[in-house]
Image 1 (tube, rainbow, N blue to C red):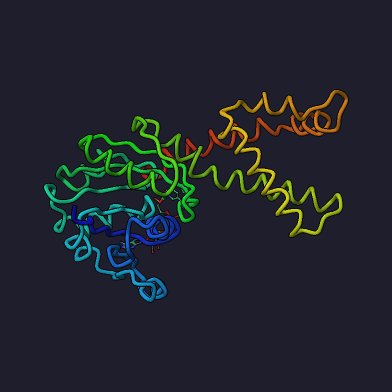
Image 2: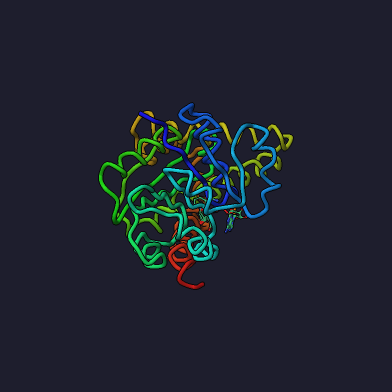
Length: 270
Ligand SMILES: NC(=O)C1=CN([C@@H]2O[C@H](COP(=O)(O)OP(=O)(O)OC[C@H]3O[C@@H](n4cnc5c(N)ncnc54)[C@H](O)[C@@H]3O)[C@@H](O)[C@H]2O)C=CC1
Ligand SMILES: O=C(O)[C@@H]1CCC=N1
């Protein structure tokens, strides 16, 4: 089967992470991927690595099969106006990673229907460890499966209902920042109790990785694993309860709810 040519419109944080992930997974060569950005000079190092780069979105779309839209919600309508005439409903498949914008919103702005699959990856896609949620309102099952198989090469992906995409944004895409901040905070605690900052960070990150892998590899529940750590009258339960008295779980839950509300409102507030 001929390799489908991919164009990534808006090659910033997530667009470039996706490109790197696809190449690292070995399913695309850089020369099958076109990266666009208004300031194309910022992509020069990618051109040196063999990617096609341009600031001409319309031409890039015309020369591709799969079009990934990776601009900010407030940049989307301008981009759609830019590519409208190059988009062929019968030829193109759009993958949108834009938060808070439905397939119907995109078709409505374009003024015609084109198959769209939404994907919500996170920045760990650059190293093949994304948690990606996939949904579509109007694409064929075949295309949803195609997109899932693409994202399966750069992490783990699941197909969900489109109404849950803003929730997926908060839990998984924003979630990377939440867990990173937790690791950073743990390392700061580690420094206060005696470790050099770089050692404390490494120790905290590896500990977080171990905790996540206990759940993923043993298909276990967090409380089951926590019970194994908390010795009676021990130091773990003392620290854990102190964190809970200070709102640890509550802060995470409230933060995720706030992010989900914001994710749903980003495009509509423009
Ligand atoms: N950063 C993340 O972790 C994730 C972001 N997303 C979504 O992905 C989208 C992009 O987010 P980021 O990559 O973080 O933003 P970003 O600001 O890093 O990247 C957007 C890029 O699009 C370019 N751009 C804007 N208008 C353009 C146009 N008309 N033509 C060509 N390029 C254009 C900008 O110059 C910029 O480089 C957003 O909608 C965000 O909600 C989704 C999942 C995770
Ligand atoms: O913060 C944001 O709006 C984007 C969406 C998910 C991750 N970053």
